[in-house]
Amino acid sequence: MKLEKEAVHLLKALRFPAFLVSILWAIHIAKVIWQLNLGQYGIYPRALDGIRGIFFSPFIHGDFQHLFSNSFPIFFLTFMITYFYRKISVPSIVLIYLLTGFSVWLFGREVYHIGASGVAYGMVSFVFWSGLFRRNVRSIVLALVVLFLYQGYFLGIMPNQEGISWESHLLGAIVGIIVSAIFKGVEEEGEVTKKAWEEPEEPERFFLPRDTFEMTKAERVYQEQQRRLAEQQAREGWNSDTTF
Image (cartoon, rainbow, N blue to C red; front, side):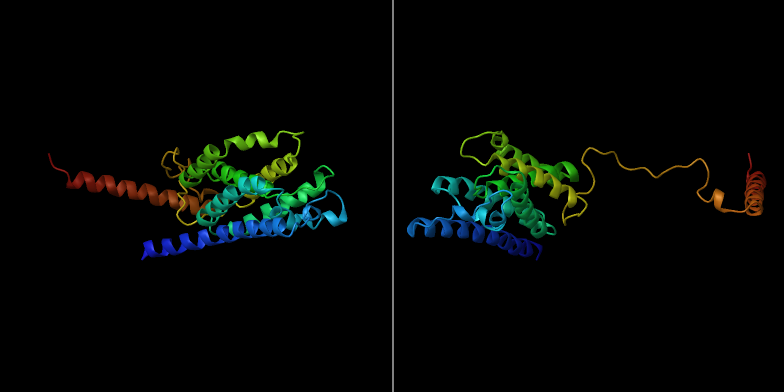
């Protein structure tokens, strides 16, 4: 039964990224066939008509190479977040999407910024930093996976790259850190909350009983009398019952 449940969730987790990437390709193919100029729907920083790019720019790509380079990361990272971070997948992806676009609108160069790479950087950063913040076995493994697969992404945040919206990459990465910090306390099903390197917890020990300062003086005196009486009875009982 559990296996069937996981299979159903796996299919659901694959459905959304597949649908998302299909939209990216459908829009670009339509753009090529009808020779549409969609660049005007990108993000143009600090301009009122550039605000619409916050919502539309990730769906617009300059050419097929640009589209192809973003398609697999968007598919794989969306699947990873949807499958392994079930409780927070929707709000985290939405926040990464919107906050990345908004931060580019605030701080980017005054050119049109298009493409889904900023969102991809946000997702990479989210998965990686979730591993550092959560520090359980599964999240750390996921962080190492994205570090291995997307280590080349570090070059994309270097400034002054011709024809590349490095601001989208850098700001997306920062947004990913913020979003992972926001949701770090939401424990997912199947996560091991015990850190792999921690020693087993021992019960806390205190020099005085925890209720010492909550009792009145008379109650403390009575408790001490009862303790001494119990010790005396124990000694007397031991002496009377013991033979050599």
